[in-house]
Image (cartoon, rainbow, N blue to C red; front, side, top):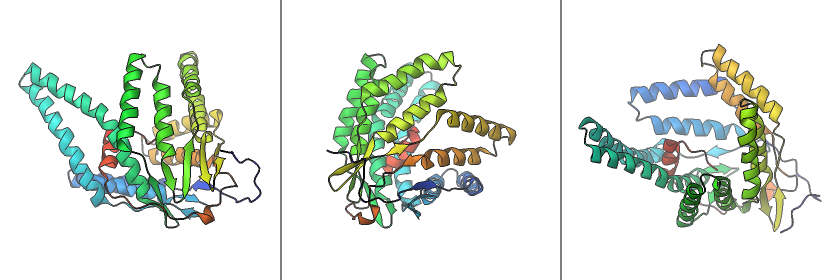
Length: 323
């Protein structure tokens, strides 16, 4: 498929994030208080508040994205995830308290197995839910991946990563990214990922050798290469043509941002954390370049809403970043 670089019809496409630290600070304080008062039951609504903030303050061509999920949807998934893992924790703790070694080992093993086994379920469910409940100008996103296929790719990748003592990890990450991103839709637009595991391996390999030598400073250049590679090898397909995204993330700018954010949080005794987070998100999103050849005015609705939030809660519980 031809990658278009020299357009005939250009559109000034721009994605921006304009959230404010004070607004995020207010949401975090309210979420914390209500979660504390309700003994944790408010947590799903707290998560919805954050998702609505992040999506609502991200705009494409001056129109904000809308996250239409609600706390009740996440609460149903939260209860399922909570019941599963609390039951396993209780088994593990009971084994410790009673000094029942077989029971303690069984509980620990089940916890580890469930955490690993839950990863593809969490990714699949979260992608279907979050994208299916996100819209722009009334056009919904969607994820058309098959759960069993994702399970196979994830478990095969994990097995090969273990067998190769971690060397296969970049290929596993790349393979999952190819599958997940290539099954993402925005109306009748389709996303594709063209990255290669061997190239991602080089990025990791350089970080492995340069991180100790630079006392960790190379981490900012690693992030630059990693994010730029992810973005620049992602394309949008429209009417049979593929349009590559661009990225302007800089290592030195990430270094400056990291250090100023660090001192902002330290000097304010942690109060400045929301402002630091806003600064980082703003930088990363505002550096994404969408080709002028993509015409968002002609996007048509093709996706349905999806309201099962179990995967979203599981993803949050496991603390796994999407894609």
